[in-house]
Image (tube, rainbow over all chains, first blue to last red; front, side):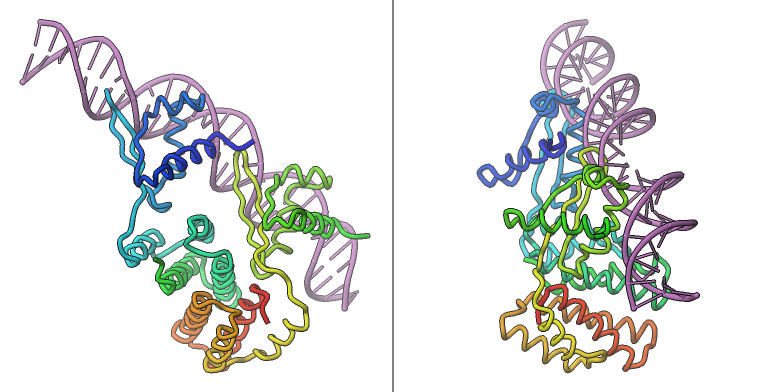
Length: 159
Length: 159
DNA sequence: CGTTTCTTGACGTTTCTTGACCAACTGGCT
DNA sequence: AGCCAGTTGGTCAAGAAACGTCAAGAAACG
């Protein structure tokens, strides 16, 4: 039913939550064996699910006693999280990327569902006006979108 | 005589009401098959009926094990209350009036602090872009502002 | 009768899975 | 120290499985 990737993702999350540890270490080969898949599947899970924009850092080492270490990025001050977010957003962002980012923030409990709804409606309106009213190019619209998104998120002073 | 779109819309609504679940997950292909239509018909239903402006959030994933998830964030209020809101805002609204209205909604506990912040920042951004980017007249800016405000509040189904 | 909404299908993109091949590190043996 | 074998993890590309977009034509509406 649920995909292999999602199962592995959930398993790693459960490891991280266990004892509230900020990081886990594991063997790629063992994990692959545990899930009955090829080792490179693990890389796919890490590449797609444990990215910096989702708040994770991954380190690894090859050879004997090799390992993969997955750590949650922690922020001491709210400002650090905002800086991190602004870096991820950049000066231009597509609607698709926005959706992914918002989904992620919501899943992490950083945004409530109503807040996310407001963000989506505001961004859609902005984009609609830019397109049909001002006839802006997609690129400029994505710039405006990035600006608005950054400003909205900053206003919440995410903690 | 009910159209295909309406049938599918009703079906999704019934899924949402079932068990009072806030969200449902489904396969586009299966649903299309169930209604004997082409898969992209489902996209049309979602695009036209389950928008953020109507209080829904839709997420999806392509590829193997893909899915479409529909979440109902807000519930519709009686039409008269929504009409009342639209009446108060009208087609043009000044920043000053906006502030009063938002303060009022916040005091009545209809908006949280953070939600109000989001509304204010979105409105201000919109206004700023309209002024400095496109040199719109104050009147037209107040029109855009009224549009955006109505859409934002309607999405939350407040009054 | 013109405009909006709906329906369909061709084509496009993203995500997932697998496997072949590559790169880096360890330890032991000269 | 230097090399070699063994042990790990990394990369990449191909193929399959979903979902998305877009535009043309039909239907419904006012």
